[in-house]
Amino acid sequence: MAAYDHDSPRLAAIYDKISDSQFEGGMRLAERLEIKAGDRVLDVGCGTGRLTSWLAQRVGAAGAVAGIDPLPERIALARSRNAELRFAVGGAEDLSAFPDQGFDAVCLNAVFHWIGDKPRALAEIHRVLRPGGRVGITTSPKDLYWMASMPALCASVFATSPYLEALEPSALEVMNRHLTTSELLGLLSEQHFVLTELHVVRRQQRFESGEDVVDFADASSFGNFLQLVPERLRAALRADLVAAFDARKGAEGIQLRSFGGLLVAKRETNAS
Image (cartoon, rainbow, N blue to C red; front, side):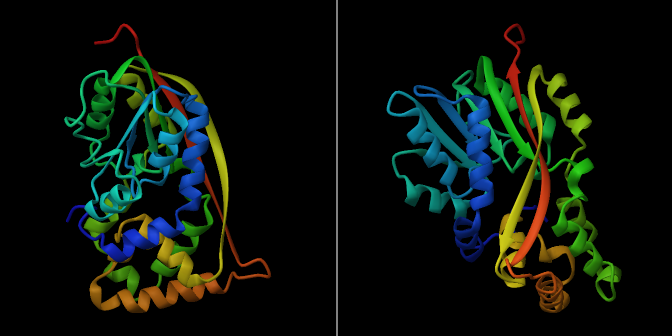
């Protein structure tokens, strides 16, 4: 089953409410991309459009911003947030709704690891960027993924019975689309992009409760998180995960760290 089949209006609304960390990461990415007044920007994987709307304010009336996301429920929220912007339902692998060389910059904020056909997506981004245009990516590289608090603690719960014996292979494939940093750099080079910046970003998140953590994980994965086990086990799994995160709660709530990659690259000016 496709990664996008499990979203719902409830999960979209939760994500819109709790996606501050992704929004802040997107603003940092825009700074590194040097997005300025008058730029034409495409926000790939725009979700509920928080970053897209902020980018529209940054480029002003002289610029143009569009967003695309494969999740219809999140695009509906994006359109309700800013009806003046263009939002399309679709994936990064097919940007045919947008013209060749139509953008100065493309953002992929906290989305690249979810894309199934990454070479095709980068080829499409190359097509819609003008020569010398910039692409910015924030992602969770495979080589940094297990340094984060959340996956390590979740793995300790998934490794127990009855969950370990019941893990769904298809869901594991969806949740394991991360590349290593070197693999990502290789793909960029193959698709005629020149790397200009590469950063490791440390993120600290605070949650009030284990329920909030699991809501965040499920909404950020558009419902795929609990799909790792059959439906008969999901309520019990959720309860065990909530308890595991609540056990980490201190005076300042539940503090979780993660590490991500931030990359900026330019389309080669002499590539077709």
